[in-house]
Amino acid sequence: MKTKTRLKKCLRVINEAMVEYMGWPDNQSAIGKKFHSLRGQERVVGVFKNFNVKSLHSQRKPFVLNMKENDWEIRYFAAWVAVKYLPGSEKEILAFLEEKWKAFAPSRPFDYTFLDQEIDKLYSNEEKVSTLSGILTFLTILIAVLGLFGLVSFMADQRTREIGIRRTLGATLSNIIRIITGEFMWLVLIANFIAWPAAYLVLSNWLKNFAYHTSMNFWVYLLSGSIAAVLTLIITSVKAYNVSRLNPGSVLKYE
Amino acid sequence: MIQTNKLTKVFRTDEVETTALNEVSFGVDEGEFVAVMGPSGCGKSTLLNLLGLLDNPTTGEYYFMEEKVSNLREKQRAKKRKSNIGFVFQNFNLIDELTVFENVELPLIYLGIKGSERKKRVDDVLEQMGMLHRRKHYPLQLSGGQQQRTAVARAIVARPKLILADEPTGNLDSAHGEEVMNLLDQLNQNGTTIVMVTHSPSDAEYARRTINLFDGQIVTENIKQAL
Ligand SMILES: Nc1ncnc2c1ncn2[C@@H]1O[C@H](COP(=O)(O)OP(=O)(O)OP(=O)(O)O)[C@@H](O)[C@H]1O
Ligand SMILES: [Mg+2]
Image (cartoon, rainbow over all chains, first blue to last red; front, side):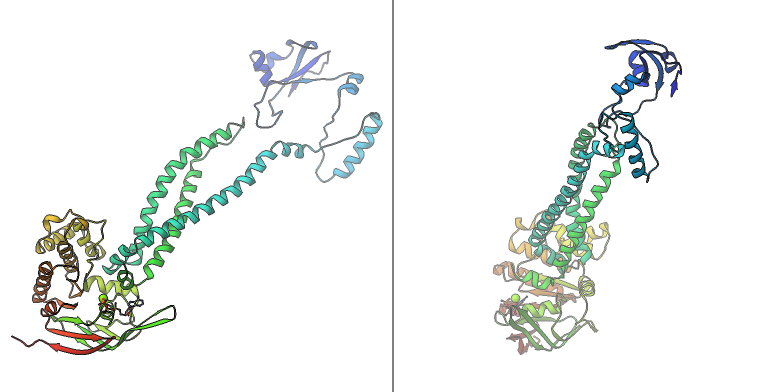
């Protein structure tokens, strides 16, 4: 932070975004510059680095800090006082602050909030979305697994005769598993190629709500694809194993 | 080649117990052609499935090529089966989604034989069965006789020592039936052992020995006199 110590009327400290907004070439040259506001002439006495004034949903905007120098101004305008304290000493600090507040501003009620909780509140929506989407994801996977199991069972039953023939000819359990699994792996692959662009669109749209956000990692897609593949593998193997345990003799008998 | 000792198979389903085979003891020598006859439900197919290692007996012993095989696990049975035994069924049991060539190729795939060698052997055996010109066809595009010839081609492509045939002519008219019987006879002349279930006395004529089953037991054995 760069400030000039000599205070005058209507002195202002601005952020770097404001320097840019006013079209001043750099921070140094901004100092001493004047600009107009509703209150009249203002003079820049310092420039500070940008910080997020609001939540991360919004961009860092030009920002002007009012410097108060007269007692009456401070009494009139100051509603909040920010206090930084060592963690663990809340109780004593609050008692101390209340006492001081009542001494300096007896006509105003003493109220307080904690900044970290205030900041958490800014993202409570995202918290909710996160739990909700976790639950929904679990349900979706459950339904998909049940559906897949039904589909695999149906297909394996339809191919009981074919499987019996192949086993008669010497196919082993792993041969059979490979046949059934292979077919479904293709489906999983195709499904992933449909799902990836869709997920990308939805996600990038959602991330647009945040002025500052993480980038999407490709491995997230690979991971979800792999999970789908592993689940399919387990389901098809279980089913293929069940079908293969029947003796080929009894399978071929009844048709 | 085959020796059974008191081979018994009991099926249990929903409190119903069926003794499909009851202490059957008999033998088949290498190079023999044996027919198995008997009324429906007397256990012929059950016997053939046990001989073909498609199923394990409930009790009794089975020796195949001088080795006790009656209690092998399915994996070991599959191994013995694919290199030694060929099957021909009444209903052909071809896979409808595969071509004639692909059907006949299957046993060789499971034996782990290379692609080029497979192609040569499949073409050879299709030629032998007079089916080479139909190699790209699907089973449903073929007549019953052609399907059964394809099935015979599949049964012999791996050059098994034993062929088990369950009513191979059951679904064929007499002309096609005779064609298939001649094929089996030829294979037997060339040294392949054959055990065949049949209802047809004329098919049984091809065999040198006929075993008559009744209610899961052997009742009579006829040995054809040498001409
Ligand atoms: N997998 C099975 N489960 C239950 N019972 C069976 C099974 N297979 C065969 N059986 C019974 O065992 C008996 C013998 O059947 P099998 O199929 O061996 O007769 P078959 O002599 O081949 O008759 P067919 O001439 O009609 O083919 C029958 O009573 C049949 O119902
Ligand atoms: Mg039968």
